[in-house]
Structures are given as C-alpha cells and as structure tokens.
Image (cartoon, rainbow, N blue to C red; front, side, top):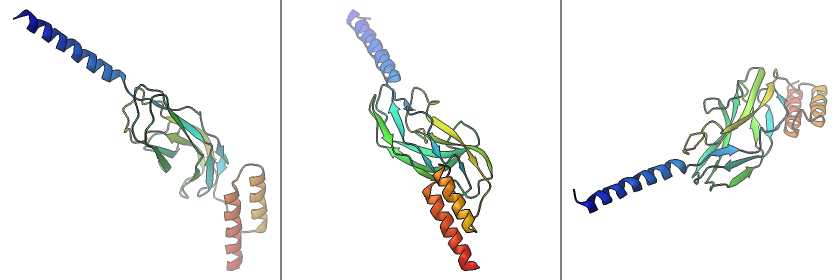
Length: 190
C-alpha cells in the first residue's frame, strides 16, 4: 500500500474517532435548580386547588437542549414520572448551555376522584424525554401533600372555617370563594 494512502487512512480514522467522541460529550442536562417547590396549602380536599412556588430549570449540559415540555404530576411516591397523574404542563423552546428559565408558580387542581391520603406533587422537566441528556435521572422535584376527605360548605360556619384556613395559609382565596358559592347553592336548594 502506498505511503500517502496509509497516512490518509490513519488521518480518516483519527478524525472519525474525534468526531464521534466530541458528539458523545456534547449533550444537554436539564435540572431544576430551585429545589423542591413550596405547595400552598399543604392539605387539600379532592377537587381543591393548590399553588406551587416559582421554579427554575437550567441546562447544565454542554449542548443546547432544543424544545422540551414540562409536566406537573400527582404521585403516590416522591419519584415523579410521566406515568403519574398529570395535572398540567408548560414548555420551553430551548435552553442554551448554562442558560436557565424561571417559571411562575402554577395553580393546580387535585382530581376530584383522588382518595384521601399522602401524595407528592412534582415537576418533571422534559416529560416526554425529547432531549438527549447526560443524566436523565435529575429531571424532577417533589413535595409531600395531604389529600383530605372531601368537605362541603353547606353552612355559614363552613364558609367562616374555610376563611380561617385561608388566613392561616392552609387554603387559597379561590377555595374560600368556591366554598361561599357552594353555600349559596345549598341555600337555594333549601
């Protein structure tokens, strides 16, 4: 084999190895840097509304992420996956290397069919695994909540009690309004 052909083949092998190696190292890594969200209230009846705190997603990888979707889930355990109960979601167009984006906290409704018990509400970035990442296990955070037995607001005392929960930080103002509306409907039925 001629010498220049050996050098050309060797150069091609080296360049191919460098290209493959460089590609393997340049991937995104999405992570929630704000930690576990605050959930208000931490106890809620089925059909009730909770508010999550704002949260930040960062691309700590070595390549742009491209478009990805995020989900908010209700789970029986602290590990949040796309197979948990989906509550709502949003999406990011793309995050460059080192870039981050802070989302405002969403209002989430706990499904009316949820049985009382201990659950976790969580955020899962890249919920559809659209982004190739160096670490696929760091895409979620969660916070424990309690789903209480369903309550009704059939008396004015129930409305006052719900307002007191709101003042103590254990209910949202929306829940107070819903309780008031429910009491008004009961009154019409009397």
